[in-house]
Length: 233
Image 1 (cartoon, rainbow, N blue to C red):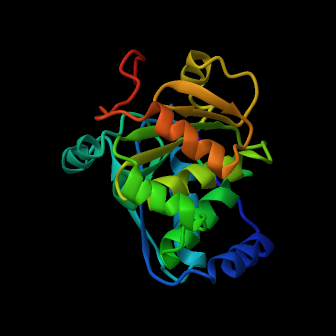
Image 2: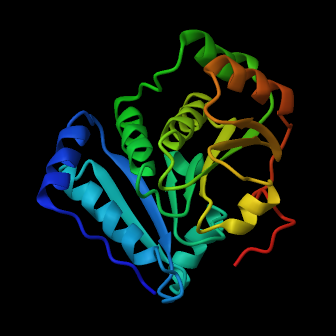
């Protein structure tokens, strides 16, 4: 069943107020399929168009369909293997599944911080990510739309990716749409923070704890898709 997005004027006005803090345009790449079995694809496109509308065009939406041969090249370039997916910050911030419900809060704050260029992290963390971290890390944050703490974990991971200048990839994985990933990591509650395949935190980690865990699990190289042992659709 394909789900449609229904938004009232009060919600639109709240989005306009929140996105008013954006300064520079931010590109949001949306990867979907026309296959009706993708229940959330159309809703994801509608959601992103709504963000573009309520930000006065500062959220720049580009939609790519799996069925289009020219779009398939973009799927391959960014190693997108599931739909719907969102790509921000040249592929270093990813959403696997629709960022709906509570997760929308984290996405909006991510867009604002990308737009202003301020990750909101301590100067010590930013210096460590830019100048001390030598390896790479893939941070997966397993979330659900009803979890009130998930947006904070997602935002934190996204900003680590933003501040790392290409050393960290953040992937916000919606567990309801991707139960195989949640099962693979033995997720029974959310948010769960996974670093390079290692479950490190249940809940929102402190900034210094997340930084320490990244240094612990850093690798020289990463391969995308990250979970090659899973069967991607």
